[in-house]
Image (spheres, rainbow, N blue to C red):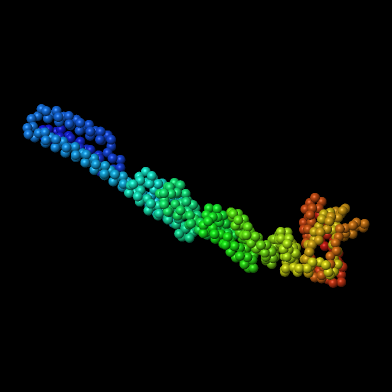
Length: 472
């Protein structure tokens, strides 16, 4: 400009304008290296050309040394201050970019509200990755400074089921939150590092108590006792299970003692798997209640006509609780139930607790090749077992059996004599194996009257157990 070389000056202005077009507005990546290198080349060429022209052009007073020095300083200050301003603008662009990244993570967290954790875990992990990257790679930025507040919102969003009292659904997200100190660091999380602990303990307890009594239930209580043994929630486990046992004990007197007993067995399983010494007192308390429940369930099954179930339950009770004062009664009802399963009219009412021993003489013989067990119920209830008859065989038909059973001369038939009070009786004959084949059970009824002596012969007919041998 001083030597009035307008064309080269215009070229310099054009190069500067091109640089400004490329560089502005400032962005995260800054000015491309090629543009800076090209502009530097233009500056060097312009300086060389201007020096060449200045030596050959008279300029008089206009380029005295002080003026030249002042203009040089100005020319140096302008690009230097521009570079500083550009760096500041670039830093602001980076900040804006980081804030935008933070905003996207915030929106991602917000979008997961109301959705189950199983469907949102991946999105939550993506948002956490953004927060972690800001803290690790851009510490000191405005976005990183805002991450702690965002983490507070993040924790509350993940743990929303707990706030909604959906304790079973809250367990998995709270477990996830407890893993974050390993990836973010306890120092960065501060109070949030332990924030999920009490909430998870409470969720374990509430969910475990809800499932208590169900098959496979109570696993959350075990995890509570193992993970947070000194927590307030863990201290409530034993009293809670004890109250649940007492509640089921009251239900044994209600209309469905079998369901209560089933739940008691599940509760005992839970109690037995609790860590430490907590199981022993609970196991004893639950087992005692199950004993009462087993008997009550068997009696209820009998009254409701579920005779096969009643027989199985009460026989199991008698076999298991040999020291129980109800064992004999349970065995009596089990016999009546087994008879009633084959002959329903035998189950119209609970049998009297009376066995054979007085009344009319009733002789039962076995004319079969296998052992026979005879169960009977009526005014008296009981069972007897007769060994196999040596030399006895099966009969071809019932008529053949009626004509010949227990009548062979010189043969000793296994027999037993009962004394039965008068009344209606129901009998069930149970065979083991005969002639290598299973023999079907057989049931029948009879009326015992005073002043008579009765005999009965059990024999086997090919195709099934024979009828009574004429009661008389």
